Length: 74
Image (cartoon, rainbow, N blue to C red):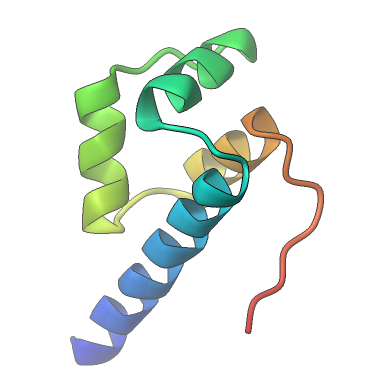
């Protein structure tokens, strides 16, 4: 169980760091996701990211929406 929490924390930090690097807020992310056809509310996105529990599909949608083309995982 602890290991699962560590992974959730890692993916949450990764997505938050990419948002920060791009200078984007959750509201900005909602708009960018809508631009690629992904409709979701700001509170829902905020909750998903804060829990660190979301699908790989959601992660890739977010990264693509905000223009991330490469990741450093360490």
